[in-house]
Image (cartoon, rainbow, N blue to C red):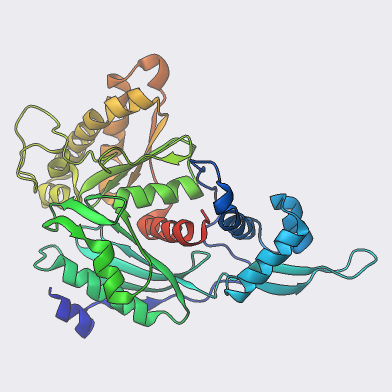
Length: 397
């Protein structure tokens, strides 16, 4: 499929019904931990983000409530709220029901529907998914580009999809978040993505030029683990994302781990076993991705008997555990979260992964290690991409 075919309407769009006013699609959430002290010259930006984050998590409250919650002075809160109302991020919600003498307080809240977030998930083996979301995570519309197994122009298709989403937005766009297979640096450059044929491809700049909004790009597993940490899981999260490729994302003690080469968690090209193995897209034999990616697994189980199918999936789970065991042992993790097609992962594969992890790590510590499917569903990368934008643009996570 070419980019021009996408532009002619080969993607599909589904409109989601508006969310209830008090509903929070993101659900219970936790903030990522700050990694540095706030310098005096950054204090106003920090305080502004603190107000937005408080409203995002706690909902509507008075200015006096905000002052108590944030420990900022009432004068500072008054100035910040006025500024945020003028910028379109905060709105007044009317007065609180009177419970005593005096003038009822006016409630303020994040304007959760006043801006839109665009999100792209490029991780699936057969489609690209894009969505327009509110600041609170409700999906307003969704576009799916199917049949992208054989890509002649992945970049063109992605850019065309981004343009469609931008055109679909009915409110100002806060930014776009993208989760893509491959190694992605802090500048949004895809250093390598063998499945797309990308090397040192500046995806962030290409999208920014195409749709003229702030863009944040991350590895799909790193985007997914942000959603898993924020809306579930523990302070230490290892999430394995299986789709077009295989990768993992790490949050340790509430802090995302990127690594010295922006490749922390890049387990897809670890060689698993000494028996050769299938040819990987990177050109080597026996990489974990060649055994356990969605296309590889789907091809190997196609048309086989149920018993053989279970054996193939168990073998893939064992190889996944071989790659993960040193990570689990070194970081003292208690669970591994899987994200991908449940029909492939939830069963013999995850069971075998748990069994082999127990046998290859210190039994006293890891005998009860759990391997489970994410509860964030198939939209986990989209949700993580939205968290990226909220954090990057508003300081909210």
